Structure formats: structure tokens, C-alpha cells
Image (cartoon, rainbow, N blue to C red; front, side, top):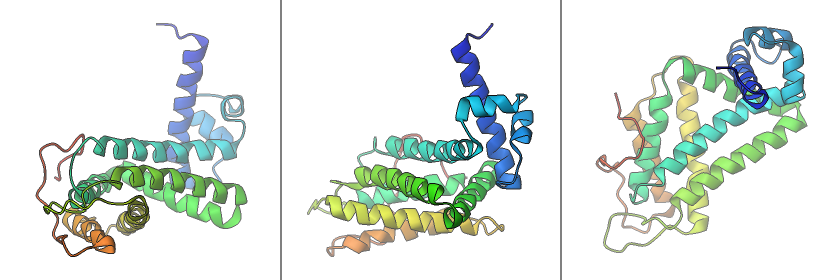
Length: 224
């Protein structure tokens, strides 16, 4: 069926994002615009028409990965788990991503963004903005959750949720980056490490061991 103008533009946009993601991950930012366009079976004019510049195309690729991560966080919000259970679910969801070609591309892009931040103020500002979006999503996920499954039912404050969110992002990123040279990401180890972040706000009622998996996990793939 013939696409209308808006549909064709969106089709071209998706094709450019896919080709840019792969080429940036494998060749870095030196990859020519015409190579990105050619891989999408388009002209360089399409890149500038849709994204405005190569820099904005790179940013769009990185933003897409961040927004997918935020969608995963939002899906976790459907569970009624206390904080330890939620941290366990999040860690296992992230660990499940740490395999295959998609992971290697995502990891390379994360390293690429760090390198860009060292030399480019534009990317440094954008990286801070994207980190804030992810931290805000996780803060909302953790805030007002029971700190543990104990009868006390003390709930996570907003400040505590932000502390846990910042810590879990740093911890999970470290685990995944270890996987780049081939060090296998161990879901159980990652889950235990993330669950132990509860002790940052521990009031003596929390447990250090990851809780039992729940059947109500919304959209989180099982370990395997």
C-alpha cells in the first residue's frame, strides 16, 4: 500500500535511526553521513531534512535507547512489590538485556556518549538531561514503596528514592559495561547487588537477600 507523505517521512526516519545506530556502534562518530544514508537506502538530503544535522541524528539514536529504558521502568510500575522486590525485578530485567548483538550496540553507544561528553559541551548537556530523565523515572518507581515486606510498612521517601535511583543506575551500568569484553553478566549477582542498595536507607527491618520472583512481573523476561 502506498504511504502518504507523513508515513513515508516516519519510515525514512526509522530507517536512518536503525542504520545510524549500527554504524555509530561499529565505526564511531567518524562514520560519514552518506554511509548512514546509503545503509538506509536514502540520500544524504534525507538526513538533513529529517534531523537537521549529523549531531542531531546521533542524539536521536541515543535518545531512542533512553526512552526504551524509561518505558521498561514504567512497565515495572505495574507491580505492587516492595523496594527489595522491585530492585530485584529491575536488575534481572537489565541483566537479561546484557547479551547478544543488541546489547553490544547499546554498550558501545553508551561508551561513545561518554567520550563525546569529554569534548563536546552540547553532548555533555544532553547526557545530563537524559540521565535526569532516567533518574526521575526510577525515583517515581521507588518513591512511596514499602521499604521491606515487614509489618512496619515504612515507605520510601522522595529523597531516599532519588538516592536509590542514582545508585542503581550507576551499579547496573557498571555490571553491563563489564560485559563488553565478554565478562558474562550474572543475573543473580546483579540482583543481589541492587537489592543491597536498600541498606542505603536501612532502618534495621530490611533483608539483604533478593526476594522470591513474583509471577506478576509485568513484561520482564525470565532468566534464561
